[in-house]
Image (cartoon, rainbow, N blue to C red):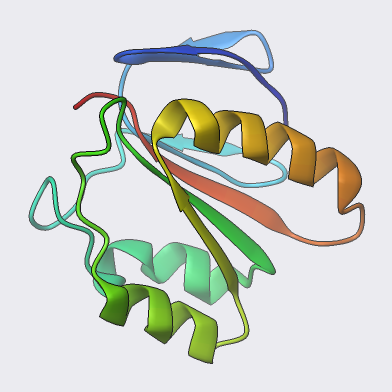
Length: 116
């Protein structure tokens, strides 16, 4: 998967446009990703990612970084052996492309909030 472009409220992945929050797995995209509390990430919001197994999780907190990612969520992921990167979504998209190209053989997933 490659992120071709990101702008507030819109992302292009493998030449397909999405206008809702997404989770990018190595072989598919889940769109309309929503969290229990909208702008606050809960560990339960990541169940599918955890169940499928992941080596590196990149979390995009929105254009302005307004989605809260509590430290206990990050620590819970790390305790499962998942490397966690939390950035504003523009930077998270760049990091996703860089890391997924560089870390061949590792399962890299991105969970991206597209607005705020």
